[in-house]
Image (cartoon, rainbow, N blue to C red; front, side, top):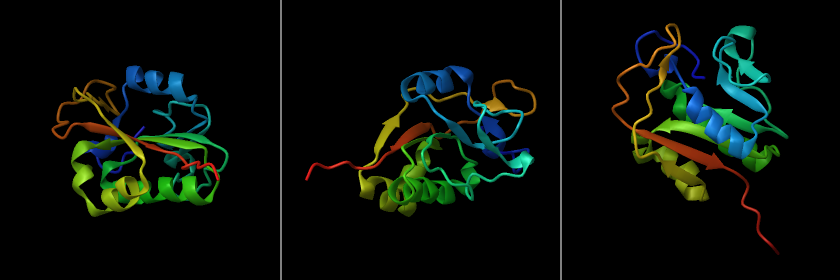
Length: 154
């Protein structure tokens, strides 16, 4: 799911099927926002190698699965918040490294807006995009952020 910007580093890691299936069974995603054609988890996708960029596409009326390139996590966090707040995106589940929780953008956009976060107990063993085998090196842990509109009764 993570688009490959470099071969070394976590931008080339993608989500193991068991984790995606568990999330998809709960949220019934309609689009994979950050993927390539060979690692997309959904038929509808914004695959960078097919000329799409999930950061530039509209997520309106979608339930979005997003495992973004960790080197661009700030841009993807802001995009998810903006789409849910301003563009009628129904829901976004975003997989992020646990260490991003201490960043200013995380506090401003996630904590500051009351989005739910789920810290996974065990470290996720992401897959190498080329070999499809478990890649070691997730030394940060994983958090899933759930972006959705705050619906209040008036």
